[in-house]
Amino acid sequence: MPNNALWSLALILLLMSLFFNALVRVIAKRGQLSHER
Image (cartoon, rainbow, N blue to C red):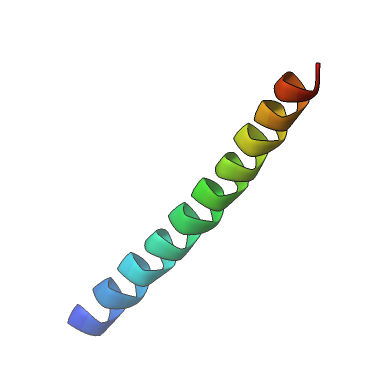
């Protein structure tokens, strides 16, 4: 079913965006800690 494929694709994109957002936050925190020292 094309609808099922669309749902799985949307779910994958959502998970990827959440993972990317968390990764960016971790990198930003590391950057701030490095600048403070």
